[in-house]
Amino acid sequence: MIFGLVLAGGIGRRMGKEIPKQYLKIGGKHIIAHTIECFSKNENFDKVIVLTPADWIDYTKDIIESDIEVTGDIVVIEGGELRNDTIMNGIKYIEENYGLDDETLLITHDAVRPFVTKEIIDANIEALKNYSSCDTVVPSTDTIVRSEDGEYIVEVPNRAHLYQGQTPQSFRAKKFKELYTGLSPEEQGILTDAIKVFVLAGEKVGLVDGDTTNIKITYPSDLLIAKSILEGE
Image (cartoon, rainbow, N blue to C red; front, side):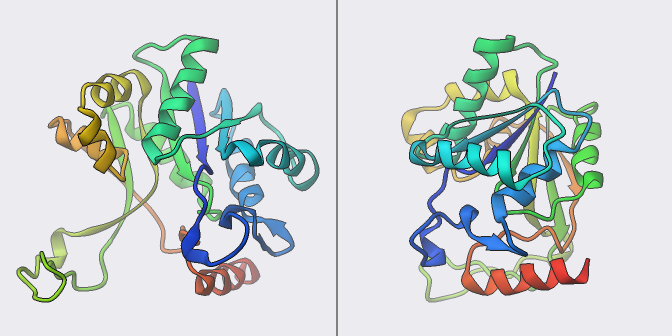
């Protein structure tokens, strides 16, 4: 089975707003509604699981009922404190209700990336035919520098080998659970990314072409960019 996980568990403090950023509006519609629509309209998913802070579950359900054109099977459940905790909550829900096997596929996506395309989602699903996990990326257009102390540059990597990670990040659910639960609590606590679980284990992670419009809305200026993208469409 194929499940879409819309990760909306964060609070988004960098946005500087009183409500989580996924519940702000662009084009008269909640950001999270745009994102859920991208998944609910994709015929490949057996179910779309939206994971939110506990206090926002009912509000999210109201948005789904009133703000989007629902064409798929959607459920809203509680997320976790950290990103991978949220993913594990989704896996727990799947295991309890559908079982978990080697063919259980997860397409995980940030709720605040509302411009993901059907082509990107489908490419993630296709990549899992050859890999246990894959990451959506775009080539880095900026020179990246590395500093260990925040004061001095210690390395300027070759940009030709660098990519900017986006989402979806996709993987086989059973494999993720095995690798993640095999980490120590300290190792789990420092992970900010799901795909790094596979990298640390030495697994090959496939690359899927993303798009520069697949932006993550993090700062107030991103709302202006999102508005421009909507108006351009």
